[in-house]
Image (cartoon, rainbow, N blue to C red; front, side):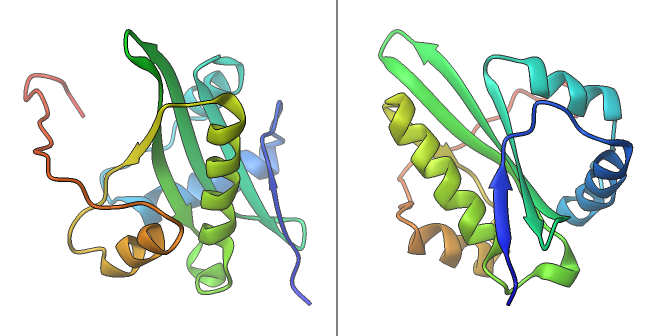
Length: 146
């Protein structure tokens, strides 16, 4: 039986960092891995890196960014990715359930995420755990380097 565990690490081994480095290109071809950036997330008060392990091996990750606004604490889910070898095993669902629980525990007023329209399976998963499509236009300032 496969065991999926979700944790919010306070430290990462070199093996963990290597595994996370293999995940990011599966999220986006333009994603570049930077171990220092990942390690900085561990100490950042507004970022939670959730790591999924299947039978002890890193199988996926997701990030919850939490921040205060004048209208209340908000949350944004980013960088949800599961290794190709572990897709279809419920890993992403467990990551999302853990993020939702964390958001509820913290009393976040909203929890948002974005997804490319072409990622139909991901969108179906997000909807199945309670995310709903909103009538809004996502804007990004073109002057910020990605």
